[in-house]
Length: 169
Image 1 (cartoon, one colour):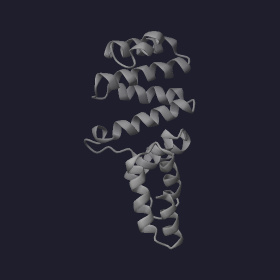
Image 2 (tube, rainbow, N blue to C red):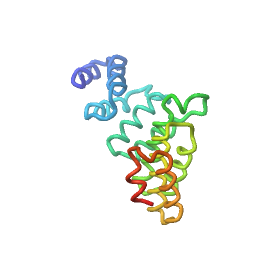
Image 3 (cartoon, rainbow, N blue to C red):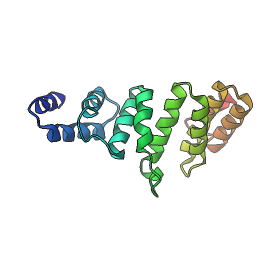
């Protein structure tokens, strides 16, 4: 698909190329092809809007390009009703993790704290609380870290994050 897109771009068939590139990102933001597609798509005219920003940001996040992820995910946020439940949680989590991996522990702690208070499943809240604990711990706030790890374990004591929460506590 990428080879076909590159041919179309040389022929000036930008619309067709952009459509295929976007489909590749919508299909999977984690594979190598998606990273190539994102690199081409970001250079094309008319490549804006929150939907595209979301795809580009999540692709960058999954490829550990955290500064690029932040640049695209921030404009992908929305205040519209229902946004959080229809993809917003994934964006907020990727933003928080990007801040964490860049050493922005205070910003990551704020973001994970907010995620832990949003309506969600016990597993998702336990994940956010465990990540909150890690951000507090690395940010030099051991008492807050301990509290977050304990709340994570209490939220989902048999879940995926229970072991990490117990070790952190």
